[in-house]
Length: 193
Image (cartoon, rainbow, N blue to C red):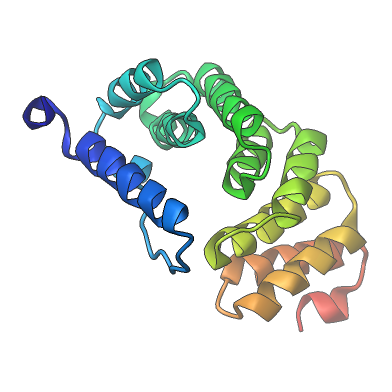
């Protein structure tokens, strides 16, 4: 009974039904959505677990459960364990839909949070080769640049931070991190420019 489900659960399945209809009709649409997993309460994972049990081949349910896991990390006290579980969810979403750029993006962020920089870079590379929303594209370049910076690959980091700035010149992290990369190269004049 839908009346006993959370608003997020109802929204999610209403969206899937609508989107499935759009795909069947082969309509061109522009979706402007906030990620529902980002604002759901602690019961979100429970709802996603139920969704997965009902439809185990639904890549979106795995993706959003991974998002919900990552969003609750600061409060969970189990960062590494939950991050690995989120990575498993993103991996299952990708098994079901290998062209899910958002899942590669989120899995890259999860690896970055674990300081597994090579895996982060590989996933963010994959994400950037697929379709991403403009904010996710900016995030992917910015976070890949941070992973390169952590690996002392300064030129690659600078290239990514330049890309972020070209896409959105208001992302202060890109300027800050580009300055860090230039300082590491002892290019102090350009670091403060």
